[in-house]
Image 1: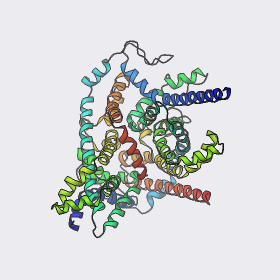
Image 2: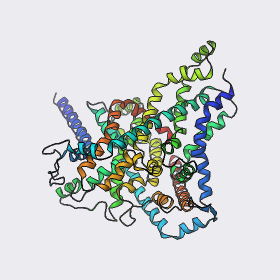
Image 3: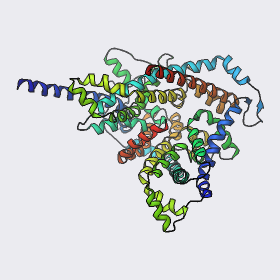
Image 4: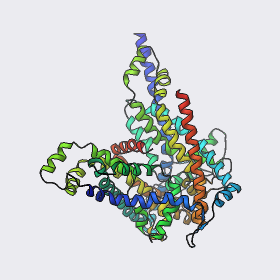
Length: 284
Length: 282
């Protein structure tokens, strides 16, 4: 039989890594948020000063507003549209597997490449403006206007996330028993009715799941802004974590930056609780 | 008879409609890639932004690829990405499956507690730990070295969870008969358990490879010497240097995309599986 000491020997390397780069850092972060620290000098305890300063300066409220706008642009689309995409590819047809792969591929592309190729799409004389021109609109200055920059970035995120969320819904749909559909068919239900009365209600748990993960992803996004717009124009696409990054690694205000990340954590927590309670209420 | 015709015609219209929707969506996902590919193949004399946009180059040429590969540090970045990927795949696979083995097959004091703590680390948001990890790397003297990028992600809750599930699926009889043959714990892991979970290891490896190949933030933070940059950071950095030559950036982009594309096409099955199992991660 196995000896207990062996168990710890096998787990030791992984546990050390997780302790050093996950568990200890999360406690450190909380401590840091009450200090003034710039790597070179010893950390100075400042109590709640960081939090007070953040809430008083306009910068935080600006990035929070940007982040929430971006979230409201991205999450509703990524929770709903992939349901229809999944319904579209959830059938036996020649070539359907190829379409599934095609829709999924953007998920695997790194943020730097996404930023580059979409940068070309958004050029003033690029394809998107050409298409708009065909229907007599535009040209739009996608990434260089305060009003269009966040919707443009949201479009990129939607492009990249479509296949990711599609797969969750596809898995959900394929786990619905065919008997239910057959019974509905016997009762004379049309295709549309089958979706509205069977597929969508049974997907509710998946919808809750995709809402949670797309919300968390949207509220933490910043590398897309960093690589596409640099947070511009004049801070119109700077998000909360982007500000954390800047304060920590450009201004070396590590304590202050940690405090911002905890405030965002609080926002995410509140949103998740709201999401959960509305779902529970609906189920009653 | 007439009725049957009507039904089959409706079916046909429906099928055409579905294909039309699929193809429109496919355009949306594919056009940015096709445009990049087309740009990279256009010669220096061909305008990039003509109205209407031209997807098929007049005189397609591989010139940009040659220039990118010989005059820019792209081969160097490519090499760096490969080195990072090798370690960022193998280390987590080994460390996670080592740690998952006792959690799946042994009984010892504190097992449930350890597993609970490991699972709890999944809840820790990465943007909160970003700063402390950077400080820890500084203190350990790992800034600027490959280890600084590799170590923080060398083991994680998701991998341990995945491998634990895999080990739990192995029947007890196999273990028992190995014990009768005098197998020790190390041999049990190395020669019996590990080879039996190869499909799960493949899934986990592919997920890790994609993460490693696409990693941007940590290589950017850790590496100070541009010679160490992987493709992502390298492309991000070069972009500024040759804004004027979009064809070259496009060629570099395609070069960075090729490994992902090849792996995706060859291992599609594992991707779908990986995506489903990462649903557990949440």
